[in-house]
Amino acid sequence: MSTNQDFTPTSSRSINKIKRMPERANYDKPTIYSILDEGLIAHVGFSLPYSIEDPPQEPEDWPLVMPMAYSRIDDTVYLHGYVSGRMIKALGPRDPNAPKPKVTITVTHLDGIVYAINPFHNSFNYRSACVFGYGRLVTDPEEKTLVLKAITNQASGCFLPKHLNLDAGETADRWSDSKQPGKIDMQSTGVIAVQIESGSAKIRSGGPKDDAKDVVSEELTQQIWSGVLPIRSVYGPAESAEYTKAPVPEFIETLTKHK
Image 1: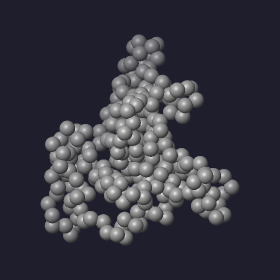
Image 2: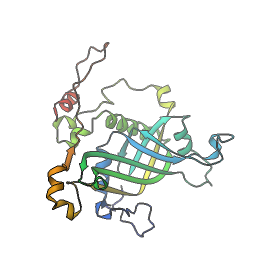
Image 3: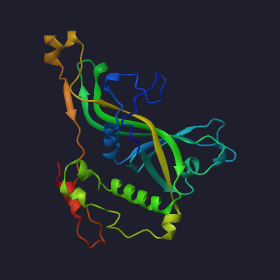
């Protein structure tokens, strides 16, 4: 893992430089990585090389953004998909003389809707992370197994108890508590590693920020409500499959009790 603890932009042209509302920007790894680690779905942006579709459907090289399960290990975000899927083909093996495939990954947590007197000051409270890197196909069997275990556990909510300071997080392991994948499963699944080259977080919290003249207007403050509607993601009661005879795992029970 890199010892550098932040991605501070080196110039105004840096890809991760936040220009709009820069006071909300954060470039340190712990903040960016905590946002990634608490998420379940990432949006992954990349472009298709022309060689994937012969001939291409359109003359332009359209960028794609796909919602994906993911996980982070140190300074790398890992993704998985079917071996013949567009993402695996686009970010996996290619001509060694060709440029490395660029990837952008974003994760956002919505914490509230902010209502202002003036609708132009309406906003959201949120925590978002955006990281940039280059795709690499994972070919080492040990790394691939480790990564698929991490993705399975993050997508199953197993990592979340640790962020909620719940004891079950220390033992939750959906991968080990599942039927282990067979040879065909592993062969048909591709894993992409995205080494994080730079990134940024953008965070908003607190109440509305109305114009000073509106805040002191007795008429407006009496007639128009302003404030924050918090948004919280919670788990409902677990719904067992009709055919299952096994009890609900402890970590799931713990998640459903946390409000």
